[in-house]
Length: 138
Image (cartoon, rainbow, N blue to C red; front, top):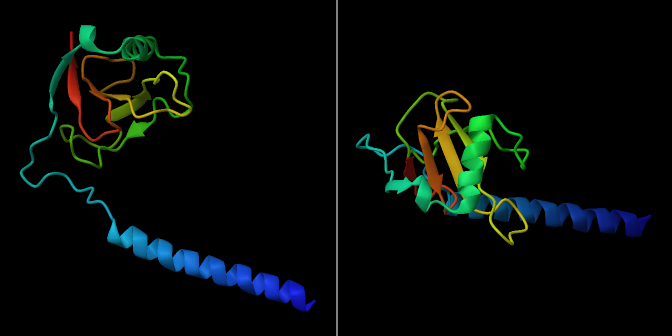
């Protein structure tokens, strides 16, 4: 009985300490998700469809066709919390995975499209998990 109590006490202490440290780490490294104060978006530039990786072109074709998408999260709302894309109401942007060869997860590459689903005339490419975007042009 005493062993079980000791084991549970050590576990509870570890969880409490982890929660405390996690809170300190999270507050020390919190990101500011507010939009840029000058109201300008920070799209880096443009990229032609012909310059995109083959996997991104395939993703654009899937978007235009309405799927099916290889990843469960494809097509979910992109919140634009980073404020890098032109401001629009929540639900305007949707994100899609651009597969990365040899990656064991979704990787860092994404296409984010604004407007109605299946529309690809207002899409942006990010190869660094939303740190920067380029508008996709024909």
